[in-house]
Image 1: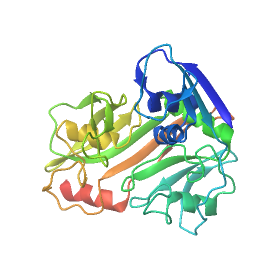
Image 2 (image 1 turned 180 degrees about the horizontal axis):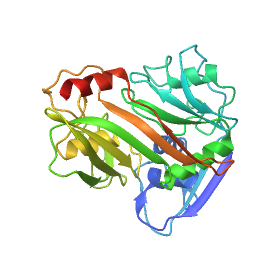
Image 3 (image 1 turned 180 degrees about the vertical axis):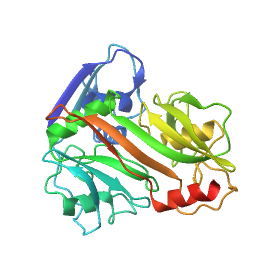
Image 4 (image 1 turned 90 degrees about the vertical axis):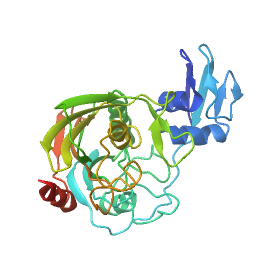
Length: 299
């Protein structure tokens, strides 16, 4: 079991602090807190929302990963690049990244277990190799770690905002400006726990957007992420009046266009430094046919 210790220097939620300290997801930090594996000033603190004060000593114990319960499945997988340490894969829209309640099979993880020989274990038992995620109905490029050294390095690059992540989206409406930035914290919606929202005590989130092409009643844009919060682009673009076309959660109840299959959002480019070689790597992938079909239709 790995142990991480640090004294808080700012007022912050315990789950947020523990996640950053142990380099794990906030949801996993919450699970460790509920299991009594996170202490504050030497005593277990069972509330993820506990507000730390400067000077409090926090310790996080992270159990060693256990064998995955997910099964390898012969699902087609587009591997854009791979070597002994990592892989870059293309996730199609409609595919969930990792098993969860209601999606125990048919996920990207199930495909990875079939097509790749090795996967890191830092993500825990149901997320082998997964360094970051994209939403079910978002298509595009994902990084996969084949060993723990690579996983730690790539996670550190993401945490330091050093991974270059660019998305393309078709959003509703036209823009007066050619580019802009949305800098607004994101957290769980106060009344609907299935949604994210801009909330005062949320995690810092920054999205840089630029117009690529005006369309009929819509716009093709490119978004560059400084941070990578859940539903970040979808929440940020909706907050400035330009929800992603086809978004069933953050889009208007009556969309001007009958888009089926979810939001037209595509992770088109990813760049990072290779953990072993130090080489700067950059990969690009075109969007799916569904995306390009709507692009042509709106031109």
